[in-house]
Image (cartoon, rainbow, N blue to C red):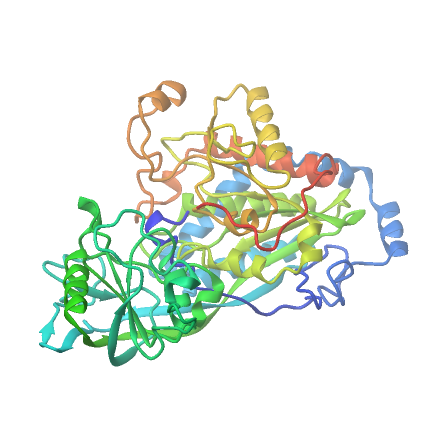
Length: 550
């Protein structure tokens, strides 16, 4: 699961290459019954056998294969789950202690999943995408050249997160490098103003006569209301050469320097002007100087900014209804700080066993499973995948179920609040139906649950934004487990996963009773909505521009 501090660092680019993409951006398709893989011409046909071939294959399926397909929860056993987790831990030990995206450990994890799928007779396909590599190489420069020279203090070292002492500016994470000398102009920025909209509207950059007043200049903006990326994108479109974003200064926690993230969407990687963040005190000083007359500023962002290739893995089991798809996914990567067995070997292993159980079966509704790359840096793999889906393919995907952190040792059974009963907004499409299934399923197992509003820290975010119904059962990460949850679930107050993003996230960090309960519940969901083809019939038309509030 992605930590909150990295969520705005979604430095992804939509898919560069994928077999089986249609003209409108149809998604990847791999069929367990087609040796051709994903070579079709469109999302309805890619990699799908003919109707005659379907009928012939169905007729040849023996009763044992059908029974195994219909009882997915029984096929997801503890011994197999443990074996997969032990392998993920061993892979991490063999490759520097982690399985982070684009690392040898990730490549080995990918190879293991691919081999396991192929060994079961499935035909996985890769979904390739680009991510933006960003590194702060040096302290950078922010100085007033005229009317009086004033040099502001940069971050003293390049280790982000270290003590910055009296530092007054730092490049926004994701900023391209640049060296700009130009006149400074303030854009709807009032220091100390709460909920400022500075730079959040195109009109902010337009003078009374209708022309941009920031063209060829450096724009000074205030933090707040919209993302850093929204502000910088608009400034760049208005012709600004660079951007300075100042903290608001309206509260004690909105004055100092912070490591802000510039890129929050795949399209944001196209931002080409340097951008830095500075303190509210510097913002006030610059506004005061502008009130006295023109100010010439010198800004340098000393960063590395390049695209790097990454990959997710998907497999599809074609069903009788090829125009309807149930998706489920789990991120395969770990953080660099540990092997990532609970986060998220548990989700990846459970999904792998569900896939293997589906091999040789013909579900009623098509089932597509995904092992996402680059979740930990900011949900990049799933963002890139959904960004390339065209309207027709989005309509095919009736629901997405997310598997992330299924075996926390100090667990809380958390179900995503699809019907909005917790007051934070209803999920799109079939979200409420997914929530109801999991609530009923855990009630049948006599296991307590809590409903949680969507936190948008895992790979369902892109599906939610695309208007696709999403569901999730998780067991907790780094949030606080309080007295009420201790009374309900047992355990102790504190983190549900005490080894979250740490080297101790090994097989010993997994409660297998908890893990098996969640894995089997997800398997039953795939059985209900995929194999049996139940529910998920009435779907709100996805809005390509839909967005969540997260």
